[in-house]
Image 1: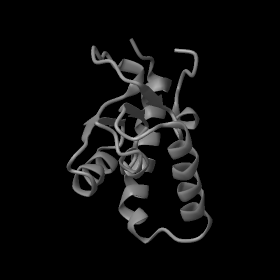
Image 2: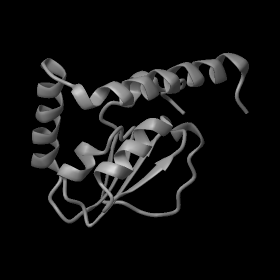
Image 3: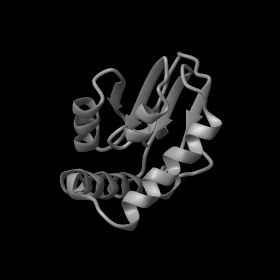
Image 4: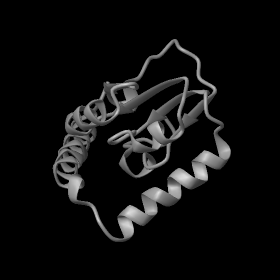
Length: 124
């Protein structure tokens, strides 16, 4: 069960990322470099053809760059999930909060690249 402060925090963070999704098509500068660098790092760690789950998947570019045999992205921003589905129709993207996630599938790799800053309770 969530308390009011937790729920307000989630709503605020989700709304923030919905706005970012609308502006992200025009991303330039250091942010673009950062995301290219993340892709490079994760490609050196995750071989193609693996089953990959990404929590906090955003527009799905990192997940897609890993060329998984099965790729699933979870994000709490509905706008990000919508963009990810458009950009990477070969992958699965779900609109959900990782705090309340119940999954039965197994994965070779689980990514949490840019997630921790938006978690209400990191230990949970």
